[in-house]
Image (cartoon, rainbow, N blue to C red; front, side):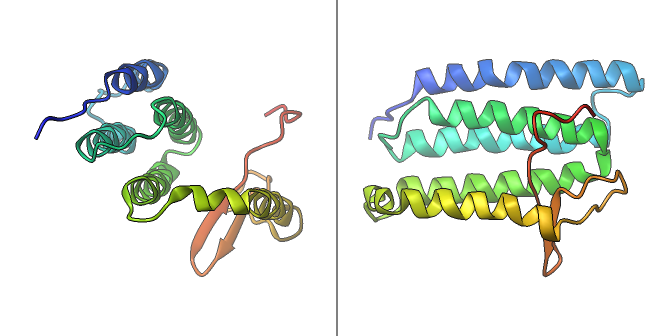
Length: 169
Protein backbone atom coordinates (compact mmCIF):
# COMPACT_ATOMS: atom_id res chain seq x y z
CA UNK A 1 0.00 0.00 0.00
CA UNK A 2 1.43 3.35 -1.03
CA UNK A 3 0.86 6.34 1.25
CA UNK A 4 -0.69 9.45 -0.23
CA UNK A 5 1.37 11.81 1.89
CA UNK A 6 -0.05 15.31 2.01
CA UNK A 7 3.15 17.34 1.57
CA UNK A 8 1.46 20.70 1.05
CA UNK A 9 -0.49 20.27 4.27
CA UNK A 10 2.62 19.21 6.20
CA UNK A 11 4.58 22.25 5.06
CA UNK A 12 1.70 24.61 5.83
CA UNK A 13 1.26 23.11 9.32
CA UNK A 14 4.96 23.66 10.03
CA UNK A 15 4.70 27.23 8.75
CA UNK A 16 1.51 27.91 10.74
CA UNK A 17 3.11 26.69 13.97
CA UNK A 18 6.29 28.78 13.64
CA UNK A 19 4.74 31.79 15.45
CA UNK A 20 3.66 29.50 18.29
CA UNK A 21 7.17 28.10 18.65
CA UNK A 22 8.63 31.61 18.49
CA UNK A 23 6.20 32.63 21.23
CA UNK A 24 7.31 29.72 23.41
CA UNK A 25 10.91 30.83 22.95
CA UNK A 26 10.05 34.43 23.89
CA UNK A 27 8.05 33.29 26.92
CA UNK A 28 10.90 31.10 28.10
CA UNK A 29 13.25 34.08 27.88
CA UNK A 30 10.84 36.48 29.59
CA UNK A 31 9.90 34.03 32.35
CA UNK A 32 13.54 32.90 32.62
CA UNK A 33 12.43 29.28 32.40
CA UNK A 34 13.91 26.49 30.28
CA UNK A 35 12.08 25.28 27.18
CA UNK A 36 11.44 22.02 29.03
CA UNK A 37 9.35 23.80 31.70
CA UNK A 38 6.04 22.11 32.56
CA UNK A 39 4.10 25.23 31.52
CA UNK A 40 5.00 24.58 27.88
CA UNK A 41 3.97 20.91 27.82
CA UNK A 42 0.39 21.57 26.65
CA UNK A 43 1.76 23.53 23.68
CA UNK A 44 4.17 20.73 22.77
CA UNK A 45 1.32 18.25 23.20
CA UNK A 46 -0.89 20.22 20.82
CA UNK A 47 1.90 20.33 18.24
CA UNK A 48 2.20 16.55 18.51
CA UNK A 49 -1.57 16.08 18.18
CA UNK A 50 -1.72 18.27 15.08
CA UNK A 51 1.10 16.40 13.34
CA UNK A 52 -0.59 13.12 14.34
CA UNK A 53 -3.82 14.38 12.72
CA UNK A 54 -1.85 15.04 9.56
CA UNK A 55 -0.42 11.51 9.66
CA UNK A 56 -3.87 9.96 10.17
CA UNK A 57 -5.30 11.93 7.26
CA UNK A 58 -2.39 10.82 5.08
CA UNK A 59 -2.62 7.15 6.02
CA UNK A 60 -6.39 7.09 5.55
CA UNK A 61 -5.97 8.63 2.09
CA UNK A 62 -8.41 11.36 2.99
CA UNK A 63 -9.18 13.78 0.16
CA UNK A 64 -10.04 16.68 2.49
CA UNK A 65 -8.82 20.19 1.74
CA UNK A 66 -5.15 20.52 2.68
CA UNK A 67 -5.57 24.13 3.82
CA UNK A 68 -8.05 23.62 6.67
CA UNK A 69 -5.84 21.71 9.13
CA UNK A 70 -2.96 24.23 8.87
CA UNK A 71 -5.39 27.11 9.44
CA UNK A 72 -6.84 25.39 12.49
CA UNK A 73 -3.31 24.53 13.68
CA UNK A 74 -2.22 28.16 13.52
CA UNK A 75 -5.29 29.37 15.39
CA UNK A 76 -5.14 26.62 18.02
CA UNK A 77 -1.41 27.10 18.59
CA UNK A 78 -1.73 30.86 18.95
CA UNK A 79 -4.73 30.50 21.26
CA UNK A 80 -2.97 28.00 23.49
CA UNK A 81 0.12 30.20 23.61
CA UNK A 82 -1.96 33.22 24.68
CA UNK A 83 -3.83 31.23 27.32
CA UNK A 84 -0.50 29.90 28.63
CA UNK A 85 0.92 33.41 28.76
CA UNK A 86 -2.05 34.90 30.60
CA UNK A 87 -3.08 32.05 32.93
CA UNK A 88 -0.62 29.11 32.74
CA UNK A 89 -2.90 26.93 34.87
CA UNK A 90 -5.54 26.96 32.11
CA UNK A 91 -3.11 25.62 29.48
CA UNK A 92 -3.86 21.93 30.14
CA UNK A 93 -7.61 22.59 29.92
CA UNK A 94 -7.18 24.40 26.60
CA UNK A 95 -5.02 21.51 25.38
CA UNK A 96 -7.81 19.07 26.31
CA UNK A 97 -10.26 21.02 24.12
CA UNK A 98 -7.73 20.92 21.30
CA UNK A 99 -7.52 17.13 21.59
CA UNK A 100 -11.31 16.82 21.64
CA UNK A 101 -11.62 19.04 18.56
CA UNK A 102 -8.92 17.11 16.73
CA UNK A 103 -10.62 13.82 17.54
CA UNK A 104 -13.97 15.06 16.24
CA UNK A 105 -12.25 16.31 13.08
CA UNK A 106 -10.58 12.93 12.45
CA UNK A 107 -13.83 11.03 13.06
CA UNK A 108 -15.71 13.35 10.69
CA UNK A 109 -13.00 13.12 8.02
CA UNK A 110 -12.47 9.37 7.92
CA UNK A 111 -15.84 8.13 9.15
CA UNK A 112 -18.02 5.86 7.00
CA UNK A 113 -20.63 8.53 6.30
CA UNK A 114 -21.06 11.18 3.68
CA UNK A 115 -19.86 14.47 5.18
CA UNK A 116 -21.75 16.47 2.56
CA UNK A 117 -24.92 15.76 4.53
CA UNK A 118 -23.70 18.41 6.99
CA UNK A 119 -24.31 21.05 4.32
CA UNK A 120 -28.01 20.78 5.11
CA UNK A 121 -27.37 22.09 8.62
CA UNK A 122 -25.01 25.01 7.92
CA UNK A 123 -27.51 27.66 9.02
CA UNK A 124 -28.55 25.63 12.06
CA UNK A 125 -24.90 25.36 13.09
CA UNK A 126 -24.34 29.08 12.57
CA UNK A 127 -27.38 30.00 14.68
CA UNK A 128 -26.33 27.57 17.43
CA UNK A 129 -22.84 29.12 17.52
CA UNK A 130 -24.21 32.65 17.71
CA UNK A 131 -26.61 31.64 20.49
CA UNK A 132 -23.78 30.09 22.50
CA UNK A 133 -21.74 33.27 22.23
CA UNK A 134 -24.78 35.37 23.19
CA UNK A 135 -25.50 33.06 26.13
CA UNK A 136 -22.27 34.20 27.81
CA UNK A 137 -23.76 37.71 28.05
CA UNK A 138 -26.50 36.34 30.31
CA UNK A 139 -25.01 33.28 32.03
CA UNK A 140 -21.27 33.95 31.73
CA UNK A 141 -18.88 33.11 34.59
CA UNK A 142 -15.37 34.28 35.42
CA UNK A 143 -13.23 31.32 36.57
CA UNK A 144 -9.95 33.23 36.99
CA UNK A 145 -11.12 36.45 38.67
CA UNK A 146 -10.23 38.79 35.82
CA UNK A 147 -13.66 40.44 35.79
CA UNK A 148 -14.56 39.26 32.27
CA UNK A 149 -17.45 36.79 32.18
CA UNK A 150 -16.40 34.96 29.01
CA UNK A 151 -17.01 31.35 30.09
CA UNK A 152 -20.01 29.06 30.28
CA UNK A 153 -19.92 26.36 32.93
CA UNK A 154 -22.06 23.25 32.64
CA UNK A 155 -21.65 19.98 34.57
CA UNK A 156 -18.08 20.82 35.58
CA UNK A 157 -16.99 21.72 32.03
CA UNK A 158 -16.13 25.27 31.04
CA UNK A 159 -16.60 26.77 27.59
CA UNK A 160 -15.20 30.18 26.65
CA UNK A 161 -16.09 32.69 23.97
CA UNK A 162 -13.58 34.94 22.22
CA UNK A 163 -13.16 38.51 23.41
CA UNK A 164 -14.58 41.23 21.22
CA UNK A 165 -12.20 43.21 19.04
CA UNK A 166 -13.07 46.39 20.97
CA UNK A 167 -11.56 45.05 24.18
CA UNK A 168 -8.41 46.90 25.27
CA UNK A 169 -6.99 44.28 27.62
